[in-house]
Length: 290
Image (cartoon, rainbow, N blue to C red; front, top):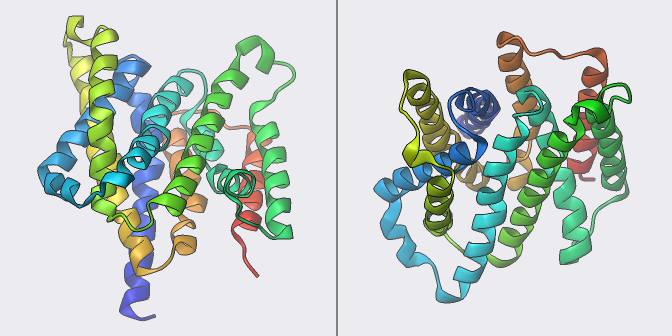
């Protein structure tokens, strides 16, 4: 194996470890903060980090690109940050990570329906299989309707749709925008509404107990490492290899997340295990090219 292949594999597993750990960090952050406070703090921690290391990169964004920067900011990060935080008040971090694996599948069908991209027959089969797996994961006829778990799972699916739309927007309209400029531009746009949400959530009135401070520590790690640094690794991996190779991280994220969930005492039954395998099979088919 040459050095470039080793480097790509190292970046891939590093990215899987970081993103797979994000779900347990959200869960821990929710112990002392509300979902809205968590989402806003995550965005603001990431923004401060990116401003420190890359604020001058904003000058490389062309005027005509800013409207798409705004769209990708909200669909790529702002909405999902709050959707995931709120979803994990009702579903486990492990289930959230598996449902997030639907993003490549959603990217395919949105690209086909809204952007004119084509996909192959086995990729369409992957979409169908992924939907079957999702149904097994979130639908328990005996408890789902009573507990409302399906609603929280649906929030994760909506977040994955936002991610999928974001990927297609970037691929179509921002492929020539430098990655650092794109990321810094996104979070600069999000910083203002994030401050508004944080104030409206009553954050300024909370008592900063040890638990709240601990939660803020988890969210700082989530924002700086799980969002800011992870995006840099992701774009570097794409540049060194390909978008297809980088998408393989989808297979490993749930494994890391489920391991953290197991350590934290989360329950994961046979039905969820079968659903997880079917989802990953669907993602595998959706990512496969002849």
